Image (cartoon, rainbow, N blue to C red; front, side):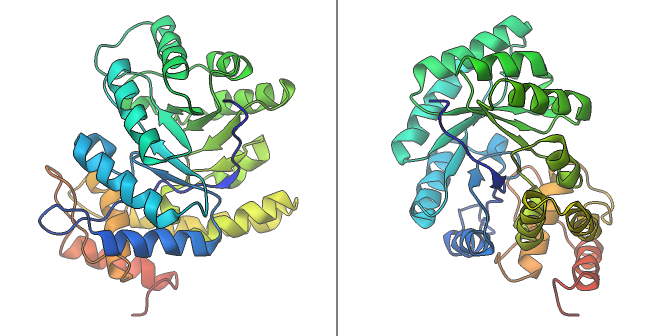
Length: 308
């Protein structure tokens, strides 16, 4: 199944909710259509930006069912099957595939932590049990395991992995992985999840990006990808610098951290822009309000994404 390839901009889609914590389907539809209209190359649902860790099985199924319906084969759909242990991820994967997604994205297990050999075996089991392309999601800040680039390269060469979504912060390891992937004949799609250094990832050999900020500003990321493909690195750098000014929605807030500051900023920006009907967060995280909303609004206004 490693024949599956994807490149370009693949946003990790933020999921809107009504104030009573139900999926806000009209807002979801507005966001997905806006991303596709902007020219993205795929969509990743139920990742960190999609609040997968806060989502019940029923909610995950609902999100993916609506996502597959709305996307309607216009771009590939990747689905996170992120869970505590291997067997849970196998169950999540089977349900996601039945709904109709194109590829699956899995972290290392993150409850009963084991050895790296256990982690490698985990991905081999997913490959064996699930008839679908598997992407390894490297996000040690959340799962407390760093996926070594040599292990990822080996699993890619053997056809166990179709790709990697890197959110590790390890720029050296990422560069080594891109170089190894090229030397092996490019068996994997290697994607960067660091939205503020996407231009550098492309220069390192990344096949694409998975930028959460693309929920708010997809057009700039699409332009950056096209510039990089054309070898126009100066335009790519300038686009990245413009986007980085928008990224200050993350750091103008006060008294919040983690999901509340990150995904909370995405949802608040999308609500201010009229794409979401509210900035509701799933419990126990509270939505941003008051001065924090005004601070994010100022960043959007200053960068031309919202009228004053």
